[in-house]
Amino acid sequence: MSTDTRHAPRILVVDDEAHLAEGIRENLEAEGYATEVAHDGLDGLEKIRSRHFDLILLDVMMPKLNGLEVCEEIRRDGLQTPVLFLTVKGDPEDRVRGLEAGGDDYLSKPFHLKELLLRVAAILKRSRWYAETGAPLEFGGNRIDFGTYHARAWDGTEHALTHKEAMILKVLSEQDGAIVTREEILDRVWGYEVFPSTRTIDNFIARLRKRFERNPEAPSHFHTVRGVGYRFTAAPEAYADADGNTNATATGPEHDAERIRNARADEGRD
Image 1: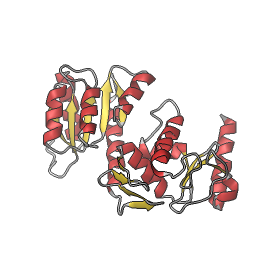
Image 2: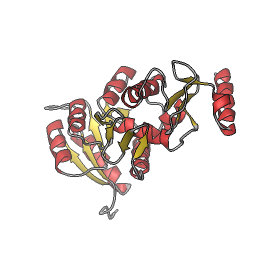
Image 3: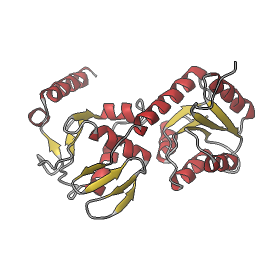
Image 4: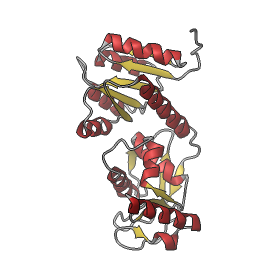
């Protein structure tokens, strides 16, 4: 089937298993994606640095330079192209290593073609959502440029945000004043729960507080709603206690109170 891919998303497949890589390329092209292949980490890194891709499918175990090293290199270069790791290793510790290296998702071999295509589509959809970001976010003397991933904090320090940090900020700021559950953040940023625990979100929030709150121990912008999630307010807001926990039913709008009741009811059923 002949497909016009001039304006299609560009995907790079980096895998030393030539037969598998070519099979993935054929199926991606059949779905309308413009696809290239590299068969080792160094070749893949060279291609990534020389032209634009919308998504990289990256094998972990490869000669010359493994997938984790390739991902770490491109993140050091400041490239935030989404990465989907492909690997025979699938235990939670390996998943976390890949995601901490800067990956966006992790698919264990052998995998079903349909699952691969669904994950590719989901990652590209999240990328399109993020690309729709408009004006920089300003709050409490901080300024976040979502387009460049550059941030200037209230104390004048400069920060380079990771893609995930920027996406979490975008999710929260789009719902200024409303409660956003940890599960919602996982769904919007990762697409589904790829980490062993939603506590991962708490770690990201702690990093954001450290950079952008004047007093991270008593935050006025990133508020914890105990047992539910977080609430972001661009305008400084008083905290309920030293941990930044707020009384969700007292501080949120009516629909937020309803969301909390539903969330707690779900917890009771688990």
